Image 1 (cartoon, rainbow, N blue to C red):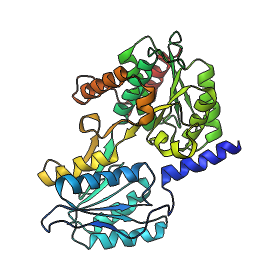
Image 2 (cartoon, rainbow, N blue to C red; image 1 turned 60 degrees about the vertical axis):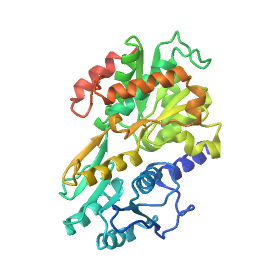
Image 3 (cartoon, rainbow, N blue to C red; image 1 turned 30 degrees about the vertical axis):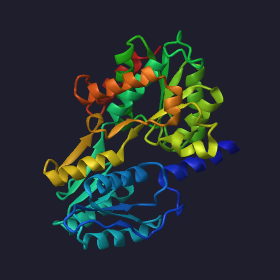
Image 4 (cartoon, rainbow, N blue to C red; image 1 turned 30 degrees about the horizontal axis):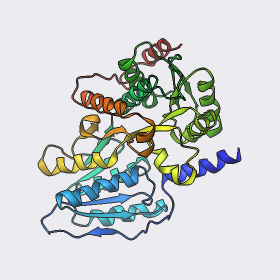
Length: 366
């Protein structure tokens, strides 16, 4: 239990940003020509999270390097009472677009955007009805499809940790809700695309943060025959990581590239993490800001981005390269392109009834 507590602390730091770790509240700036596109990113925390915030910043650096844009990244720190001042100051300056995310600053971003109707704003990982604030959401079903395809292909990889005779995979979600079930439906579709005979064991933690329960339930999935488990389990995902390590079975994580986040502090704990299904915030912001410049996108609209734009997908890190054979990685690249091009259809749970989701889930039981 002590190890779980320690690892949970590590994960929380990774997910919600390491408070004051290597990040200054002073703006980071890059000067360019006066007529260049000018973009500001307000970080509701500090860089160094190896997650959403760092990913968003990478998109800004891409615009700076490839498009010669003028960028500024402001780390607002963890004092949420100060955020409004940062937003107001930024809105009174000469920026072509002001970017922020995630859910914890959505209401503030909308309020400020309403106060400055002539300014352009982007909010990532959510949508909005404010006419000058573009919301960017992500196709969870498509990134989960890639996780399902990876898991199914690994069953026949010849890996010593996988028993190919047991055609069972696992899914551990945080809650039985539409947004989590969107991952489930995409995961099932990805599995069935590879092999319709594979079965799926599904469990829900019933909490976003219950690490011990997630560990217990993930362990049960392994004990019941699941060869690989996919875990859209929110903050409780460290329980799945712990179960994967102790059971010496493979895991596919979600949202955070958890191997990259933890390999420097506890490489043994994440040694069995094949990959993570990601919302690639940086790539999505490059798409959105270029779209603003060329007129193909507008702050009057919300956009849901997926594999076609490179805004979601699997984490391609050193562990993925090590554990997943080259032929499978190549196959996954082809699948990703086909989904993005619409050649492979992926269902969405968001438009399904609770009964429809339950029917699909139950049909996958061993």
